[in-house]
Image (cartoon, rainbow, N blue to C red):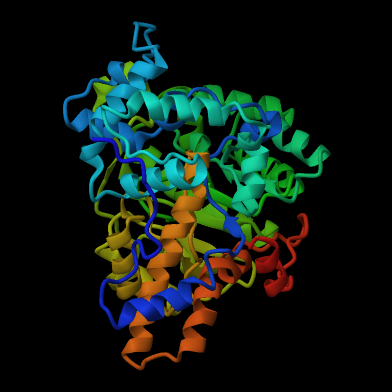
Length: 493
């Protein structure tokens, strides 16, 4: 059957309640055309620096999307058939049309998932597909996409402007010299695309490759790193370079939220052991927690917003990791504790005027029990958006319902899309704005908010709050906080 009228319903993801939905429509109409403030994501800055045409549809939309890949693998589709590379060089499917056909023939697997929502938005709204995806339509849709991707209007920078992205933060290793950001800055894009300092590889001393990364850090900073103090000094130097390049934030992906400081003598011993390749797992865990504390201390000095993304056991299947490497869908959430883990950090810095600590979780049991109470009292703490497995329509609704009672709306940071899939950025922000509109509309229908307050709050959540939450460090590039919002909205209408 040919479905040649594929469109996006204007009320998608809004509440079905006949009283609440019209209110939600009124609210969301004030936010959908606002600029996108994308302060945490994993888009490669080189994509925009090079501004080359996107590759074939499979390489753009299927192979790198771990949400999509993991669903297909769960139903028995092998990684090889999806073109996911192997580290050992053994052959995988290299015909992009064949990969696309495999994806299209399994489109039904995504019913009810956020992947379906995002991908529909990308295909219909961004790429102009008008025929519903299926095994029958796979080739016709593929040919349409090839034609679109050859058009200069679909190159990365053109889409960046079309999406209405005001600022995009990338995530970059601490050892990066940021050449792509420098190239973008030279072309006037330095305020639009900014780096984020990610030091994880240097803070987990038992990780394979740690010593090689330390050597790389020494090469970048022009120092010989032979001690804990050398390591800290080199990290501080790299942070200064990131700030000079326009960075707004750091990002930390630890398994635990533990941030217990160590005596310098203990930290020195652990680093010495690690440099000799003799560190044990207990010391490594203690050191990573100590370095979270140190990262907070550094943020009080340079003003970088500190983002903490704990609670994910990476690469659950070691055989898949050995064959494919990371980021192919085998990262699994684990229970995460914040109250005791963060207490030493918050005792020292929770009231510091220069610290902004943004907490994320994939353990939603902690939203109301731990995270909202922490954000609801410590001035330094803000709650990050529902992340990874929780940035779904129902996950975002549960988040607002769980945290608003205790933390309110203004101790959150607005939405971050946390995606590698550049073309899905507007889809993710669209969904978040619709969910927030629905939540606020219910408060209006229950006479807990007036409509004008709900509209103002929706605009704040979509635009003002993320801008202010990730304001520029005092020593960095300017990030003006008071543009005329109506003018901005009009420009992106």
